[in-house]
Image (cartoon, rainbow, N blue to C red; front, side):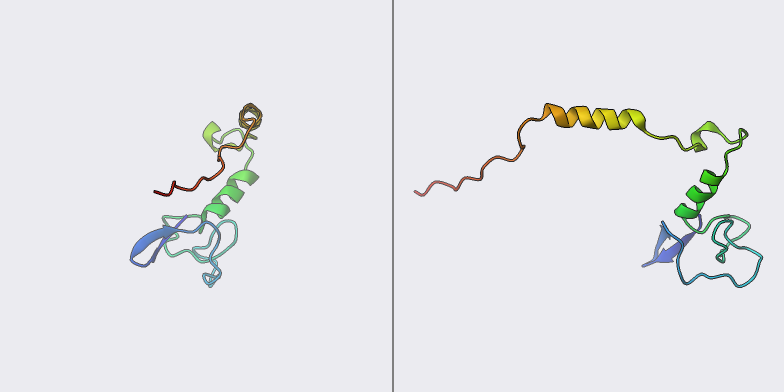
Length: 99
């Protein structure tokens, strides 16, 4: 994913930007075919395009950290934490005493 400048800072886009449409076949995003500023360095224009591309790949040659797995254990932990809390955390607000 390629960064761009906004308010003098480098920013990475989560979703493809609407104003960077295709002008030619050279230097375009592999997923959405939008124009890339530096095609020799970057292959995707945004994080969502990169996630989509790795979601499509399901070959065994990919490294294991790139595979998308469903988080089943984290959901169970969240459910057990909510069951332990029986009352609300916030109490009844009280006014300061008058002197």
